[in-house]
Length: 259
Image (cartoon, rainbow, N blue to C red):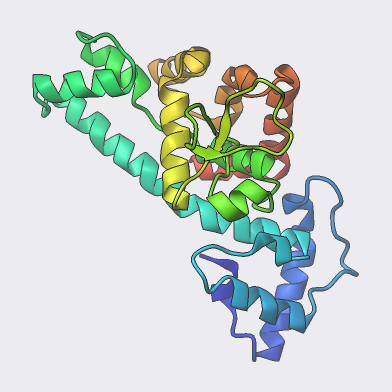
């Protein structure tokens, strides 16, 4: 449930309750400078935030209170992540139950950059969910909690690149001779869809998919903390990047979404 569905702004008593809740939740949401109980959310700030979140995409840069911004960020992205994972689970069920034709399986193999005659088992290694904790942590890291230019203007929450001229937006500090652009999406769904596809088919993330398969084979829950180890190619900082993603997951208690 979104934070703002919990109270009507006009109800003064509930505003007081919200201030107390946000203050106590600060240690969960803030990864750098936790709010103290002496930092209440002003009524005017609540009014402004409510106006911003009426639209499909919140204006994260205008939400000054860190705890509230993070709560709004998680609540905005989580439904799209859950919908995508539900789509994948449905497709996995169809594959497992032999409900797809040979032609359909061949198209999936092509989409996921597998051999034309890939087995059902090989296809299932590629077509699988990504734990919400991992997706949320990467989105927060790559988009600066929704405040980056590419997130705000182009729905790119994951720092995704494309490599054909005009496919996206040229970054301001692109190295001389580089040809990549930052991908542009028409919606949050488009961003999530491409991010999931990228991790599920890009050869760079073969290790991530191997870890996920091992988790499943061993009857374990597929978690963001486990899969984060396969993200070393995602950023130039490699292992430091993995550590930062795991820290985001732990500090913000994002494991709860993987259950």
